[in-house]
Length: 238
Image (cartoon, rainbow, N blue to C red; front, side):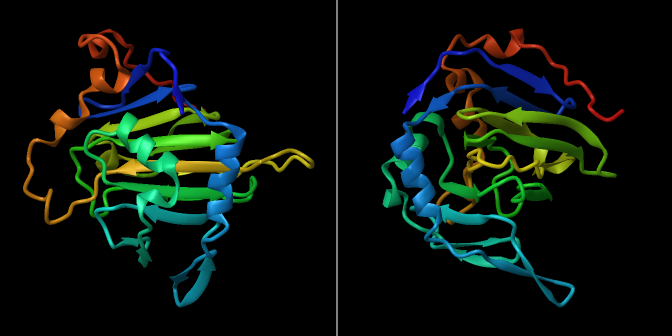
């Protein structure tokens, strides 16, 4: 796995919430991508009960963690797989993580697969930023206001991009992966990997989580990087 030295822009959505889009941060070989994709084929397409009816989850999903045995995900108890399921997972946590203990992986076969608008505050430590990595075909991440659901911005995530949500983002905003037109003959496969810090008996009492996610350490640059980046995001809703 190679990481680039491209600088990042920190976007302050409110005085409490921020996000970062860092393009081309991670690159993997086609072999590693195909191995990760084949791993997704081992997971069933799950269903949810909505108003008494079963609804297909529009993607495959899995959780990888050495700290958790299972996790309640969207009302469904999901068994966690060990990180050694693929060497890339351990490398990813070692390179980019400071407090995260679980990887949530979504496999999108084509543009019809998507991720509903939601926040990631379920059982998570609210003080640790959430890191999302996109591999493969480009997808659109949409940010919405949690109150009212109005669109704040659409962010195009390309292969190797990181998107980080920090501060009170999960309390004030929703995020989703939207549907996209399916191009005949093109490879529309996308793997989304989210690094999260889930509360366990071992870490529930640790109140100093922010020290694990120092922004300069994430960027791998000078300590004043956070003060120099712009704080603005255009509103995509006309």
